[in-house]
Image (cartoon, rainbow, N blue to C red; front, side, top):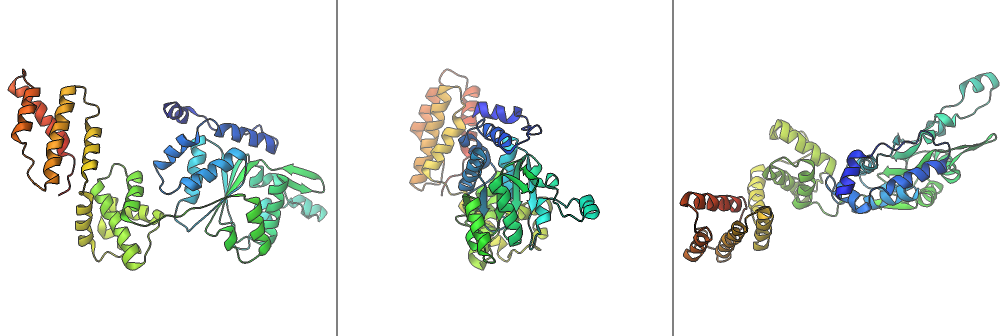
Length: 379
């Protein structure tokens, strides 16, 4: 990943300004996608998003192969944000157009050539003023409610990779179109031709949803978006969101969860009351969240220990840490609450530091204790 981190910092925005044909744009976009491996890009995405691996793979495939992509799913789950995030990683230019109910053809393909219309009474769309003539990727939001006639015009552009009229064909300069919509192609009920169009012209499809709405799911989201915030606060909010989903059938979308967290962190709990959120059992949720967060298994304790001491340079200190931890873990498994060292362990630790002054030995032992005391243990 080191090489790709360097590329992420040094990569310049993809220059498509000299492209005159669709194939030129497609070729440059595909080449750019090869500069950072999928696995490395996914790692970057995973720093901000949860449950998005399939959608990420769909977007990556569409961009690499110049194929149109259709992402569907309820609002607030990050479809458009994910698309833009990935395009920003690769520094590929993009443009966004928002569809709306009964969207007419000229809103999509460019305003009419008014001088021609006024002087010659001839209606002609100025395709070069449309988003399709801006090199890059086209993001279409909520395109399922557009008029059938507008969908038919879009179908022609995507099929011909340009706009055709009696004067010839003006090339489209988008490598692919990625649609983010609440409905899937199969859920479009107002027109069968529209349903068929989206199914056929957007061969790559992915549904953007969460698998579950438990505290661990919300916590995974919040810890990514607010990495510097105390985990106790984030887990409390995650439990609050879980409780609303389970007890009140009120599912908090990721977007709203992030918004509530931002307000809570900046203004306090009094200022989140106006969200659609039940707060009647806040104190109980705080107590339960604290208990759950502090529960750790022996395996987790040992894993955390190794992570904490992995950078220790002194082999004796490392051995002492492990010995200290084993003593603590053993007591935990026997449900002994005290963490006082047994005589044998204490003797071994002292033997390890044999030859050092009492002050130096105590300093090292205190350092070891400090490392281990940062780890919460299961009672």
